[in-house]
Length: 158
Image (cartoon, rainbow, N blue to C red):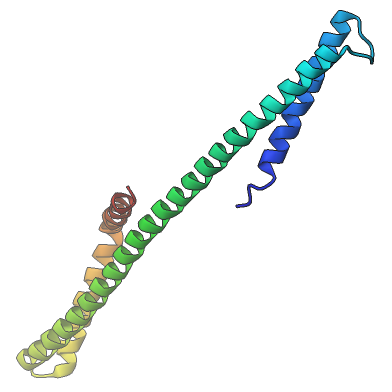
């Protein structure tokens, strides 16, 4: 972010405020455009004091805002990396479970095929059991799985 115009804007606002104060004081005193040298020097001194203080204050504020933005960027990067790492871990785990389930299904199909005397019946039986398991998971386990995933993501964020 670019904060280079912020000091100039604040200085301009404060100078306009001081000029308005000067104008109102002159109205109360009954002075139109001409001022005495003492009042003019007081207002000029006030302007320089305010501008000097504003320079220091603006530098502090800009530094603070930059630090806060950098800290926020660091926190977002850390949280994002945790979420990304968790996502990669879950995807690897799901992939390994898929392969384990596939090998288990093939082994069960071959075993049941030997029991039935026909490998086709073994694979058919395993397919039906898999469909029943998918049906049960999609109807009754969907909400609990989604809640667990959501809770895990929220826990990794906070």
